[in-house]
Image (cartoon, rainbow, N blue to C red):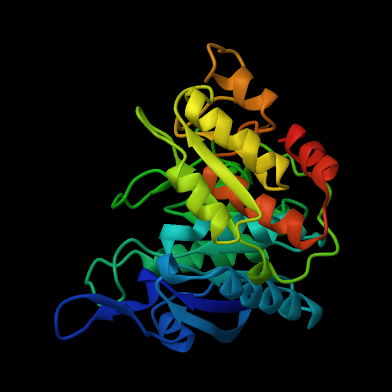
Length: 324
């Protein structure tokens, strides 16, 4: 018999409509499992960790989730399934993967349709996630996201559609595998860096994402830095470009000890310092910005926050993102 811990955090999978018709999380893990046909040979241990819509999660909540996953693994289960809202699955999955140093799988899943909807996709997704968490083929693959039969690596996976039943994708590398007749079929093993050690509380670290666009100035960067941000992630157009005003602000904040990352709003492709002219990627890098490789802003922010919470200095931050 294989034992899988099911940890619930809320999200659409655990939501039903209130008197106004708004979806609100509140369905317990035991209730979620009532509608699930468990895979053969799998027994579950259920623990309700949080009950929130995932857009409302804080970095302190991610600390709670991270510790709950570690505690479940320490109790000797064969795998962990975490139910989670789809809005910020990409952040939580990536954080868990950054620190995961165990071959046993951790699998995130959820739903696009609420628990009270007649065509809810929650039970099917949960059954697939349980099957993957119990499958020996998932060992060593790290943290995974399972949705609509597709199995994604945490790193690089993003929510790409607001309503589709298969909302997640890695625009760069594609899925890791699929669930076929209740079994995991691996198409490619994910590439994962060495686990990050020494992580303390993310809640003590502020890292903000700043969108760049035609006519952007230093207002948002300055406000975030004034609010205590230790890091800024620029969501830039194209390969990672801006304008002279933003470049000057980046230089000023880097000189004051703020870490500035340069990412892109484009779904796929690596970041490259190609353009100059006073505001291009070359100018931003010369001002001290760090390219994030293929990581987009949501996951780049999580990695920077985790690195700073683990005590990384500027050289260690640059080295970590050079491998992204």
